Amino acid sequence: MDERLTIATAEAERRSRDAVERFRAAALDDGLVDVAVGTVDSPVGELFVAVTPRGLASIAFEGVDRDRLMARFARELSPRVVAAARATDDVRRELDEYFGGARRRFDLPLDRRLMSRFMHDVLGATSRVTFGHLATYGEIAVRIGRPSSARAVGAALGANPIPIVVPCHRVVGANGKLTGYGGGLPRKEALLRLEGALL
Image 1: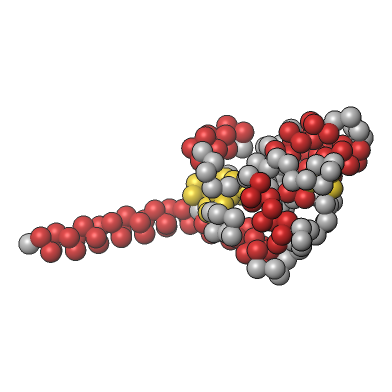
Image 2: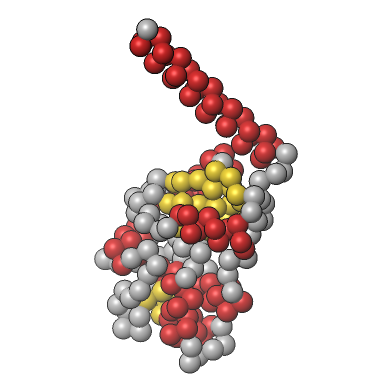
């Protein structure tokens, strides 16, 4: 009797999971999902990604409060947030290629709505720091026409909602030292080593 109950329970759970997956697929196909979230395994820990019809909106490192992040998505992007791995496939593929050494530049469209105007300018300049190269906070400040704003540049980079793809890890202190990174300095160092920017 217990064995039959266990089998029936397992079957009911499987049907429930299948129904949820069918719902997610239908919602995506019908354009009812404004923010799709999923996870990507990487050498720097599990990444939590969010994609909208405009493009990649967020990459968060392991340890970030995901409930708080989901609330931000609902508030600033759309309340229609759904866990949908299929919608994040392009992000997963490009990140896998990057970490596998087969990609030096990302081709993903970006949704920049989680960025302030100043952050948009800072991250735009940061995006032009190419694979394997470094820039300083002061150099980024000069590139955006605000040469005395190196500290504000650092704060904007620390709040980058799309790290790795928008390469804030390529920005270092004036003396070349690794300083500050939203994902922690060990991750910044790992990314720079991957790119050959550090010996």
